[in-house]
Structures are given as structure tokens and as C-alpha cells.
Length: 275
Image (tube, rainbow, N blue to C red; front, side, top):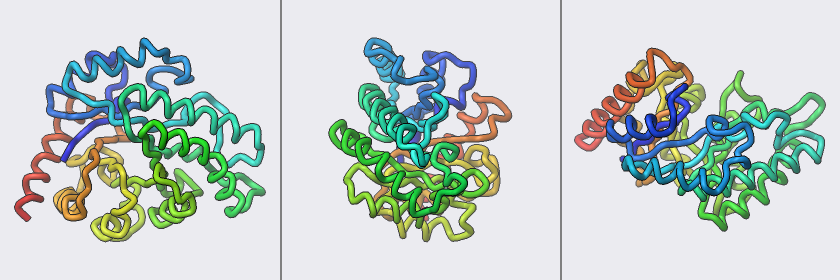
């Protein structure tokens, strides 16, 4: 298993410190939230992209990819009835593909529940149509740059659209595009009330990324979610991507979260291989 961690975990840290610490713990990758570098990622110039990548590599890390894609700039939406808003959002996501690829990343996780809501007066069918239209040019560019876009299911109350892996799979299959996949986010999948191992087996062909977090929104090992069967099933289905620590509760501190999460995941990996 290859383990990575999301950079917003290290709130207030500079990039060098983040990379040095994550690398020292044995993480192999870092997943970037673009807003932690710039309100508009298009302002991250070519030289800065090279520097970000080189600092990570110096500490033995790969940039896995991007997530939290549409936190900023404000006013973006892939499901807005206003075609000009959707076009601006599509253009921004295409630009993020370039950022991701320039950093050496291969994954973009499209969560952003507020920017993909079914708005009042809009039907679900219309939202699906808007979503697909918005993402088509993004997927085309992603395929050209070797990037996979993962449609992330997010449960209520976070999202009112694409809330389950089944819904994400429906969207992925509607795209019929090689750059369109989905993601297993353990916290979100736990809300479905189905055995996580069954979900992994059902959607293994289109799983391109994994977010490791407890159902309580903290890091793996900080709650009651058992990662031994999760990792064992990922091994069983031949999953070869990253397992990336992503938390929503930043207590007690970045050092403890990062250190204990990978310690727990390594323990579970060892137990999984013996199961």
C-alpha cells in the first residue's frame, strides 16, 4: 500500500516543513488542496509549480493530485442553471488539470458539495445534464495530461447530489470516458450503512483513489472504524492507487494526526496481509 496525506492537515505550516515532516514519517505522497497555495490556482506560475514539485521530491514524496477543487475562487458551480457560471467553472477545472499534471499528480478529486448542489427549481435530471456538460472538456484535457478525475460521493447534509457510490458510478458510466472514475472516502462510505468491503468489491473497477478517515471525521485509528478488512479488501481487488489520509477534525495537532494515522495504517496493512 502507498500512503499519502492531505496537505491542509498541516494548517499554518509552510510547504518545506510539511514535506520534510510527512517524508520523515514514511508517507510516499502528498495530496494538495489548491486553495492552500492560492485563491485562484491559475496564479501559481510555472516556476512555482516546479519548486513545489521539487521540494516534495527532495523529501521522497510524490504529489498525488488535487482535492477540494472548488473552494475558491468564489461563485463557481458545475450544476448552476446559469450557463456562464458553468462555463467559468469548467474553464477553471481545466486549468486545475494543468496545475495537477505540472506538479506530477495523477488524481483530481471532485468533491466540492456546495459547487455541485441541485439548486432550488432545478430537477435532478437537469443537474446531471449540467454536471456532464461541465465536466466533458475537463475529462478530455485530463486524459491528454494523464490525470484521472474522481467524482466523489458525499452524503447528506454535506451534499444533495451524488451522495452514494451507486450515484457516482451512474455518473461515471454516463460519461463513458477513460478519465472519469470515483473514490472510496471511508467516512462518506460509512454513512451509506452498507458493509464497506462489499462497496469496495462492487465498485473496484472504477475506484481510482481512497481517502482514509474514520467515520467520526478524524484520522484512521482515531475512532472505531476498522481498517484491517478495508485494506485487505483493497488488496484483494488489486487496488494499486494511494490511500490518502484526509481529516475534517484537526485535533489534536498535525504532528499527532500524521504520525498516528500512518502508524495505524501500517499496523492494519500488516494485519491485512496475514488475514
